[in-house]
Image (cartoon, rainbow, N blue to C red):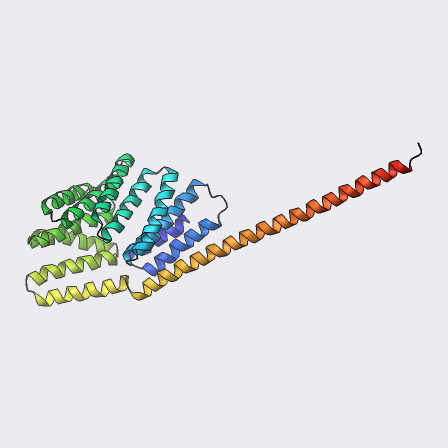
Length: 305
């Protein structure tokens, strides 16, 4: 399960979503077949599978599936008592609320995530929360507060070896500086994110970066470069959120639910057959006891007094 989830995560970060969802669902199905349901390692791997599927669903715009997966994962992390796991899933649920433009609910979830990250002593998680806070401030038009939060995140990630998540504050700062008209500062952050995105083969981040470059060159009336980056953004976005990926995701979910139902039916059949066998054994035992009792009575009756 752990190996399948790790492969799924790698494919998701590369933007190969159809492969990613296959591996996460395979891990989830394997967990369903495992008899030791209270095994902590198996439970942890299961919530990682749910989290991975939730993230892919969110990328594809399926907030309903994402929300259900994240909430199931959060429930599992609470059972395990994992502060870090709870922090991750509170943040993910916050992202769902943010996508739905339910900003008050998003704030509440991100604050809970920050609290759990502090309990877990996770610098990475704290940095991500600062980025979330900044994004919500930005949506409320409070750009000064937003930049302050993004910079906190950027400073923490400056010493981190997690290059994937280091792109988040870079992109956030690049985008907000474009909006306030400081393209030179934006280009500095964008160059760092661009290098990381290509090193890590992240199509999702490459698409974001291409869109930001388009915004810069469109503002400068550099039509040739603006068109180039818009085409790049369009192609990368299509490869991520194509109809093929959406349909494949839906098919995998239906297949998994079908397998679950079939497993439940098989379990009920086995239980029925076991009960049937026990009932038959009970009847035979009763008959045998009756026969033995009758024979014993006859034997005593025939003995001379």
